[in-house]
Image (tube, rainbow over the protein chains, first blue to last red):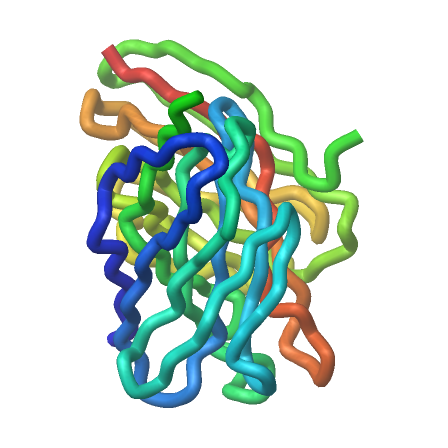
Length: 119
Length: 116
């Protein structure tokens, strides 16, 4: 069964500092990986996704993530954090489009990492 | 208007009451999902539907039921609510598997349910 682990429940950084949120996954083949962000009182918004190609993926709001197959990781990074980045971040894994119809779209989520940004 | 709309956004109810959460979407997607979010547990899948005639249980379906009234509508029911069903509930949609399909989920803004 696939699973996702986000080791850090809560991270606090100062505004302007760099950020890295960790995500480790367990999956039998090449996974389809996602990072979502949830601002307070809001639904989840997709930051970026990866299935194939360049292992460094660019997303919205200045975020990027790097897929490392050898480490089963898909860590999210941002070089300079803004106060508006304070939110909860979720890593998720799912089946890619060609894997068949029964599991496609059913994502397994990590526990989430809450990001606090100090001024 | 939001592509995925959930009603109600907030609901407080009592143990034993029947509750329905509704979801409608304008994205034209065939696939719809109900997830539950609890602090520290992330999101867990309750039920999902790949089309109007297809309903499937997810990871935590006990105590819940669903109805897919139309392609655009998917409702979640708690027949007899209990306090440990207090949570934030999300409806989501996705496209069908196809070359170039995004595979991502599109979420509503959530329905916060409190069971006293």
